[in-house]
Image 1: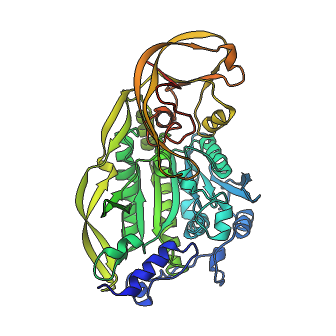
Image 2: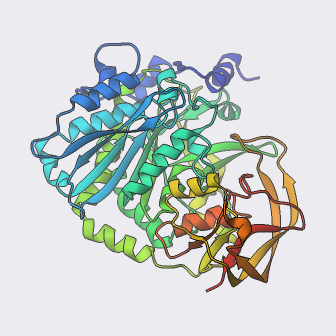
Length: 512
């Protein structure tokens, strides 16, 4: 029988919403020694707790960039509790400067993220980085979820996980920062997070359970609507470069993974295909995108300096890669914006056994564990359709039009009557999920596609106009994810557009 205490600890660490320290001093001293560096941010001023929103606002307001470097502070709007959401812009104002987006604080129980943004800004004051800042413009969003960050709780005030809200946009904070993101049109995007190393799922491993080991996990997209060249470039240029930086700092790293129970088996999911969260969502806007997970949730201030150094060093590496190779980056993004002939509606991940380094709690040391892994980077298509010239959305409500605008989707309203030949989607099966998920009741459905004559711009559409959404736009891959009905994060699957058995959906395809 396994000893009770470690498993109890894992269960508490998973269930508890507050911050705690389940990790022994012995393990910390063996594997996670603090770096000998000075960090001049609020959480390192001798206090016990973490930086609050007012601390972040004061830091941004009083920040002094290197001489001659442009700097501006703005506010996106207000959170659900009326807190202003601060944002800063640092670096060149030249229209040709590479645009880099750095955000954190989507989850309020991951304080290393916003501390790392402030430490990154301090590091960018050094004269050595002035050349970089003459070539890039950086948008910095330290606390995307200020209500959660102030309370040190994962979710927004309405109970939603904001990193699961990026296609349905049910939280006002998501609408605000998505609007800012798409107005900025980043070419490189980073989202800084922390992960929980002590998980209930890991309690079944070994004799006394195991824990996550790596300082840094890199989450980049395996979504097949992100062009292969962009996926490869993200991994081989930016992730690999940051990995070398981690090696130089003696910080451990690998591709991101998490666990789930599937029919009684512990299965590891590696990478991302989901448009609902930032790693893939940002990539679908033709952008080098990575979500960074640093080992930290549930650890309190244990190894906090090491965590802040990890995140800020990854961000600094990405900024350096973009600043040193702007022509190469732009050439890749120009090529990957070219239209793909197909849209991948569904994909599947192959499963293979992979050895993953973890911490054996019985030994207080690392071990290699052979586990079944489903790797997003090895995904293959399951349902594919020809890429349309455009989509049509019939009688789009104001709420849907506002979501599309926030997501950077360009559309035109049909105000005069016209007839088009199009493809319709008729619902041939539909079943709601058993439970609500993140504010919606998702559905499973199948459709039949057939050619029809479509009349647009009728008097009935005056209040809610018909929309034409061309696929000749920057965010075209994201548009396909939103409007192909069976796509995992489509407006239909998430219940934002109703689906009725044996009836046509209000979404149509115009063939090339």
